[in-house]
Length: 329
Ligand code: SF4
Image (tube, rainbow, N blue to C red):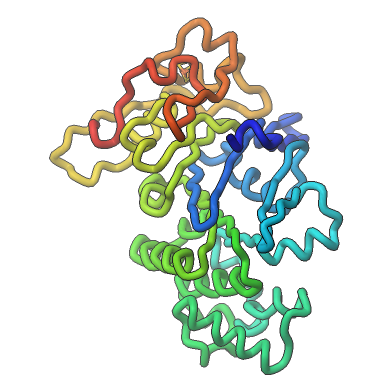
């Protein structure tokens, strides 16, 4: 339903060396309250640009982002003036990839976490301190350390500080952009658990961007797969991992490390490089690398079609090919 009702997002820009690039090409997504949509794809496929367009951290070239407010009314983020946009940004936040560079090293944790409250005139003085203390405890940090600087904290703790800052204004929707990618595996698991606990407690919706399929499988209710700026498949996590309908998803899944080494590895080696978004191939962008490509694939761009309830894929042969999920590999 969401796909028909809203204008999809496109983001194009000029890059000096390569020319006009469509980083996001006609993409529609829908995220419900308390839901996590995972976004996967190789680097440069447009995941980050899409996340930023949705928040209007960068301006989409076309398309709209409808956001349901606390009172139930829908607002189109792309049409707001800067004042209304600032107000609604309290409800939509971004957690960055790198906890080492995203926190200002010259600010104390109190100032880092409290800044969004100060900027929005939401708290000051003792009330501010009290709220920061509450936020630090919420993310599992010792609130007595609020006068310390970021360098005094480990990578995982810094990411907790970033999360506390993102939560300061009581948002409903958070874009987590590679939020755990820079962390060690054991710390990753702790931060993912924290994000899940917070989601349950605060009824948060996440757009969770990651190139790591294991992380995506663990945290997402539904998954979207992007290739060269386009969404090529969306489904519930279970469906997507067990029964991929797009050959690119199949190839991505086959590259996922196999937890049980006794299982036979049956990896699909993708021929060639990711297509150049400044000069994409004709027809289906995936055709030069697709083991199932036919003549029609070179000529016609496949539309996103519903293969099953809640499962969409942009492939001329979606549903006809028998692809292998991770379980069958
Ligand atoms: Fe492969 Fe053709 Fe499907 Fe594209 S449309 S993914 S080239 S089979």
